[in-house]
Amino acid sequence: MNCPEWEERVAGGDPEAAEHLRACPFCAALADGLARDARLLQTLPPEAFAVDYAAIRAAARKGAVRRSRRPKILAVLAVAAAVLLTVKLPLHRQPPAPVAKVSAPPLVVEVARAAPAKLSTVPKVRPRRRNPQADLDRKFADFLRTRYELQHPAPPRATEIATGNPNVTILLLPESKGEANE
Amino acid sequence: MNKFALVLLLGGLAAAQTAPPEHGTRSITYEFKNVDIDRASEIVDFVTQLDNRVLIQLNRPFKTAIIQPNIWPNANTPPEVMEKTLELLKRYDVAPTPPPRVEFVGYLVWASFNYGSPPGQPIPAAIEEAVAEMKKTFAYTDYKLLDTVSTVVRHHAEVENVLAGTNTPGGAYFYTFNYGDTAVSTDGKTVNVNPFRFSLRIPSGGTYQNVGIATDVAIREGQKLVLGKVRTSVNDNVNIFLVLTVKLH
Image 1 (spheres, each protein chain N blue to C red):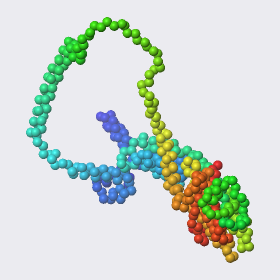
Image 2 (image 1 turned 30 degrees about the horizontal axis):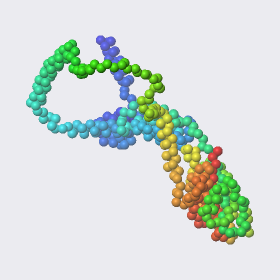
Image 3 (image 1 turned 135 degrees about the horizontal axis):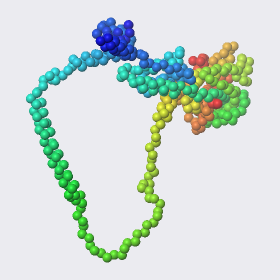
Image 4 (image 1 turned 60 degrees about the horizontal axis):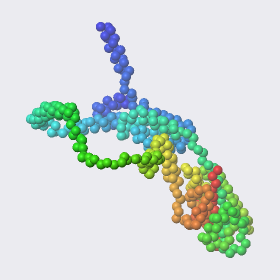
């Protein structure tokens, strides 16, 4: 018997299908989904059937009234905006300040050609472009290193004698008694 | 009317041909070609953890990986995820850099306190700095080189030899180096030996007595690892130390 046939039995609740479900992850997923759907159907909220139709109608009427007022308001605002644009009301301009008449020699402005000024002395840090392949290869290298360290844990250092030379390590080990291959 | 019936018939046949695909037909099999089975296992483990929507089973005898959709947490694994997984397996199916040749050089050092004229040779330059540190650490007054043993190790190795200059009336001393599982770290700088054993067979009343040391070792090139101490039957003030070094070629 193949999976489609078992699926029919699973859907029909055949107890013989239980053995197959243990061995087949696909049919097991189907059975799980069916069970979940059944649970959802059984747990429909009862208040869904107790509807206050009067409240719904009242809310609908209120919404309709609001919707009918909204175009009128928008039309008025549009007309006002059109009038403002045509008349060009200087709403955003400040009144000109009074200017005193002063006789002064004309200003001489010397313009020196200097190097373009830097906006900031802080060097710009360009975001490093991410290389997904390189990241993946780094992950793989980390994975291999971690696995190696798990398989070859660092030997215990309890017997290590510190020396002044970083290239020299002294390990004073307990001697095997009789059997060296213990 | 006949044409209508024919159209119905053809339509029915077409519908019968477009049955939904069966489960299990979506698996992809990939055969590793350039790596050994241990490396293949590492690749499979690595790629599996990248995306939980796929399962990869390694068929060790055939060195093949079977990519299957993982029904948990999502039963609908997109085909492109399967294809991407296949591409990753191919990407890492490349022969790794061969590990360097590991050559251990072990120096057997006699250490004694006011022994008189100890046997052996002067300490060679290769382990002078190690013996200098031993002199700062221990109270021995004499240090001599008894023997030098060079061993190229792939995975395991055992070397047995007669300790030079020990042909006593009771018999000769024998020593044994035993290198257990030997592996080079992924950065190619450190060698791990699990375990390393050094033993000495000492003649004793017509028989032999075994003494020795055993430990896991992690050693890098350029390092001098002083291991000890092993007693001898000469007297309590005479011990043998081992200075272990490694060369990676």
